[in-house]
Length: 158
Image 1 (cartoon, rainbow, N blue to C red):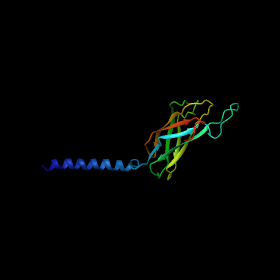
Image 2 (image 1 turned 30 degrees about the horizontal axis):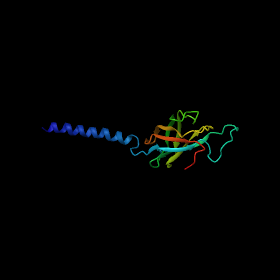
Image 3 (image 1 turned 90 degrees about the horizontal axis):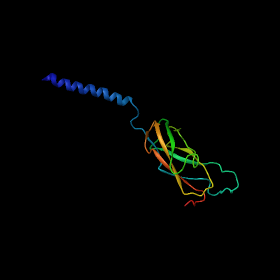
Image 4 (image 1 turned 30 degrees about the vertical axis):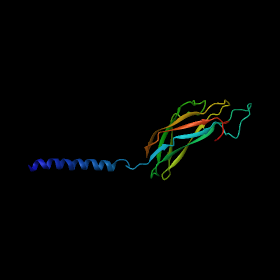
């Protein structure tokens, strides 16, 4: 009877020894979460400055999109992202990003990535596109996408 009890107890101890070191040797268990805010509003061009009809095309407008961590990290967080068309079309309404890489330095909780909005002189309703978080190292992925709404320059800033 005694030999039957020893085998399960020994097996349980061996299993515990195998599992515990693997967890301790693995990646950090308490990683911060990286993600986008859900909504951004960008202007086609600076609303206060309306270019004259006969002037050359205006420069692309910069649009900063926040990527944040749920808490500061002790190590660098590297992530990749891309844009995806919605009612706004790549190259016509915004500059497409097929895959880009950025990082958040240790101790910081956010970084801004800059997207470019392409201005035109056509009055149009709001358009949108999506920015997607593809992967991250040093953090888990939280909010994977954010919607960027492009407002026409002649709309009010209410």
